Each structure stands twice: as C-alpha cells, then as structure tokens.
Length: 281
Image (cartoon, rainbow, N blue to C red; front, side, top):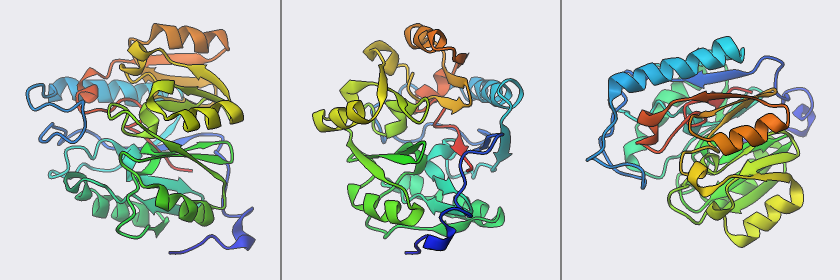
C-alpha cells in the first residue's frame, strides 16, 4: 500500500477544479444479465435502445448545460455494469484508488479501469484483496471530509487505509437497507457543510454522525426509491433522476439549479445519474 507523502499534501492533492471533469462509459454493452442487488430482476430487463438515449441525454446535460468536461472509457463486452463508472474507484490529484468489487460479476471491470487510469496518468493504488471497496459508490467527498459507506458492498476495514492514503478524515457510515446498497444511492453532499440524504438507509449512529456534522436535507422515501440521492453536483447545479418533485423544490428554494433526467432503464439495474459518473479530481 502506498501512502501520500506529507510533503505532497498541498501540492499534489487538489480541490475540485473550476471546470469539473467526469468519467463516463457509453452503454454499448449495457444489459441485465444477473441479479446482485434488489433492483435487478431478470424478468424486468432494460430497453437497451432507450437506455442509450437516456445516457445521451445525461451526457448532454452534463456537458452542454452544466459545462462539465467528460472523459470516456469504452465498455468491455463482458462487463454489462461498466457503465456505472462511479464504482471504478476514487480519484484525487494524481492518484486513483481502484475498486475491489465484492461480486465476481463486476470484478471483470477492474483491469479495464486500471488500464484507463494508468493510460491517463494516474498513479493507481489498491487495497488488500480481502478488503472490498466500490469507489465513489461508497466514498463521497464533502469538502475535505470523505464520507464512506460500508457493510453492503465496501468494508469498514479499508477506511483507515483510505484516510492515510489521501490524507483526509473519513466518516464511516453503516448502511442497513439492501435497497440502498451504496452510499451514493442514499446521500449526496450539496456543499461542504450541507448534505442531502435518506435517513432510513442508515443505522442510528450514522444518522447521528451526519446530523452532527452537516446541515441536512431529508429525502422522502418515495423519492429515495426513485434514486433522488443518486445525483451529480457540479457547482450550483444538481443533475438527478426525474420524478423527484419534493427534493427538486427543496433544492430550488435554496437557489440550486436542478436538471432532472429520465433514467428509468438504469434504475432497473440499481443506478442513476451519479452511478453513471466518476469525478476525476
């Protein structure tokens, strides 16, 4: 395991750039071929042509309306969930901590993401094989604090190592409902001190931690089930799945510009806007 040298804390680990850069994967091989979360059902498979149009709409909103710079990775034919790039790892400065997927069905993605990170100049870190970690799916920066989910897909044993690697404090948050199996399905930092979240996804102590450290905006269960929390935040813009009017109104009341995008075919696999994007910090 490589640790971030103390002398590089200020120079090599940057804050969010003025123009956000994200990694996306065009859904050329997207499909539902197995069931590894409660949203997946082989009896309710996505319309892949519609999924491609929805992905294009998300790409357009991010690139044209929000102004993000988007890098692309081609989808491997044997990796139907590779479109969910948020799970590929966690990046900061010149470093990328590669995912170590819990399910073998997704482990096929790891060499493809490693190759992309290395080809694009990142120094790739990994956790021990026994320590599962699923990237930004379970690790979200709120300013200089890293929120880290565990129990369903990622292991709490990795949190201390991640804190040491990136030189940031980590708040460990236990997820208790299988429907919200990744942290990014049930919360997102709106700013460094304001968090949007669905309380029912967390154990009581995690809820206490979040309420003690952040101003919070609670999401209703019906909108949490629409993956309202699986949102991409860039500046004063929030891109989220359509069908979440209450959260949209709450955000707009705070002066936030909200961009709803229909992502029904990705919800069938348990993902939405944030799952389809990985921040390249």
